[in-house]
Image 1 (cartoon, each protein chain N blue to C red):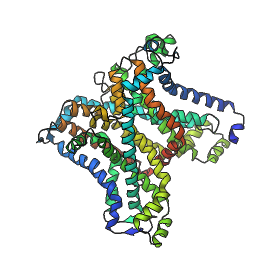
Image 2 (image 1 turned 180 degrees about the horizontal axis):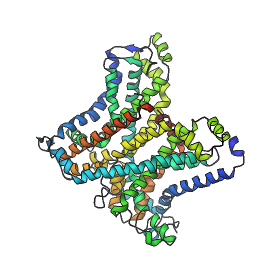
Image 3 (image 1 turned 135 degrees about the horizontal axis):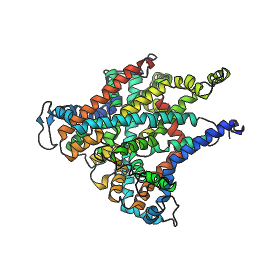
Image 4 (image 1 turned 135 degrees about the vertical axis):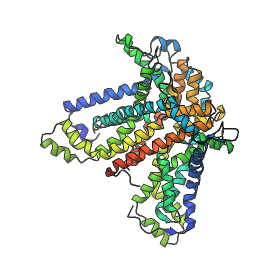
Length: 297
Length: 279
């Protein structure tokens, strides 16, 4: 920022104000991050002394088909969240954008799942999708479509899709709120001018709303992508990689390797790969969208 | 009732109301279904999943509370969240004050380093953090969740507090300086009251994150007496996977108070979120 005026105070003693935050951050974020880079090059069960492994863990990671497939699953998941969370959130922001009575309550209800924990959402939706008594299958049976009832989370073809849908249920409200606030900042006279020129609703949306929301769309896509790669809670709660590894994502697979198999060294190497992938994608994405100057820092 | 609502609604507006209302209701229905299902017997849940309970069995809730040890889970979650969020917001405010109002060696570098935390996903250090906490003898204590919990919210909190400090001119602080106040007095008596609204926003947002945290809680706590709600709930539903009414009851007990709190504080939650996500 250019408008920084002269500092209130100068001198090394001022370091004390930043010290608590920096110490906490260094101890519980930077230190384990540095340790991860070292452990990634070792064979280590977590108890005995780590043995130097060179690149062995990384070579193994490249041939670990479950790990590679977990990236395919997470990319599909992210693609789905762009539809079920970001796009759906945008559509709902437009639909719920009204001063009429009832809309404020509806926005509140639509946002409510965001404040719940992923584990509560996961447990609840396991019931909704339950084969015998779940809401979805019961609804299908009650309208005479009982043949369509499926064990949604227990078959590889549908499990990942339904996790994506639950994720959409949980987070569409978050994106709705961001887009809603942005919609309120668009000057109304732009729409009035467009109406005078004879633009219909859809034309107004594509010609005014979308361009005005470009900044928010860029930020929301970044949030969905970085958040998606780190996704763990919902996958762990609902299927933990099952059925037959169809919903295995990097985070769930890493935890299994490290804690169920006691291969800390290998698990850490996988976390390093995940960190690299996430960092490269975010930095690349920010570079590409830099013209929209989302990076203020 | 605002003036706009007094006008008669056009057909398009009724259509908008109807479509939006239908979508919102369908999406909110599972939460309502969860609450009334928790009062039913397992037999009723199997026989007629949609129907209201023939008899409202409050004893389901009492049983779930006792069997699941929900009191302990609640207490642990409250303690961890309270300490971690206070720590994070206080430290972050002091750091944001230092980064925007003070001058000291390494100021820019430190802020840059802190920003690493904005893009880093927690699973990327979870394993190394586990071995580190074990060596520090912190596993199975609330501190295993409090210290990493606060640390992982810092980057985001400092980032937004710094933006808030920058948006306010330092006139008051400079006046206090001229009156002879020292830096600590300026921070505590001038700056903190000034940025208090932003601090409250950060309290709300950090509370949601820390309260719902699952991964660290799963790995760093293996002692049932120290568990927090999200892990407790997942384990409970695993143990009692066939006792539907009991799991519904536990779900209701753990989510309804949060939902009520949310609807009371709704304006603050949403205002805070939009204020932050726009920057």
